[in-house]
Length: 266
Image (cartoon, rainbow, N blue to C red; front, side, top):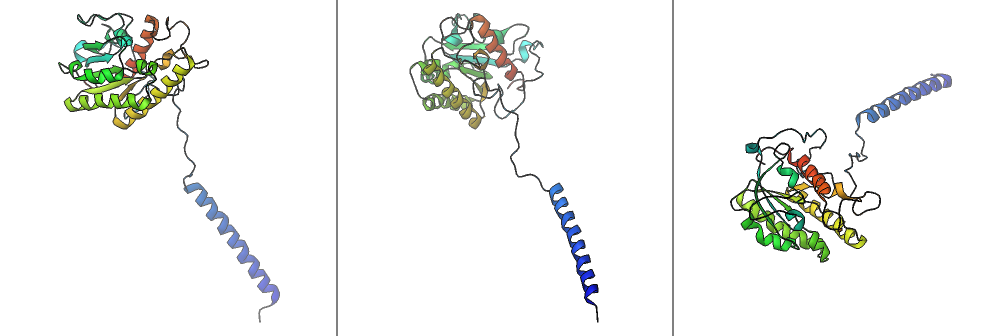
């Protein structure tokens, strides 16, 4: 017969072996099983609670974009602009001479510009509803790219964000039907707090709509915003609505960082 002491020794040995196998199994599982916790991604510039200026669907960072690199005129996308007084600035729409108060003045620079001018359709005080009605005439002759900067007057009229994005959707459908790429801008700040809150709401709606419809976003509003106090950075507007030439230059640069990452010809 096997003695009690012998059984005790065997039970102890089996227990030790089992413990070793259990520890090895846990270590293997820990090393090979991916964590179920969500991974943190790099957050966007939250100066205006909107993503950094990139095109939805492209997701290309702006770092390393050389805005001084010369792009021959014939390689730049032929671009039509549609907007309100911020787009018009001091531009003579009959001759196509663009003034420095227009936000896109820098995009047309002979040496550092990113686009060629096709046409400008812009009038003071106009809303995105008016722009939706002007899209067909703006795209004749057909450009490569249509850039829309609209919504400031919608905000002044307390028009809701869904109305703005619905108007932009009408523009998108028109551009899609003729194969023209579309880019939309975020809005500049407002000096009055309630109006500025509406700007943020419209910008968020524009970005969400653009992401769902593969529309290019040009975040021209962020460089003008005071990230601490809200509203305009001091010195970038004289009336709380329109950018100064210095502010317009920043808007052009923000747009160029995105446009220069899009393949030529859009």
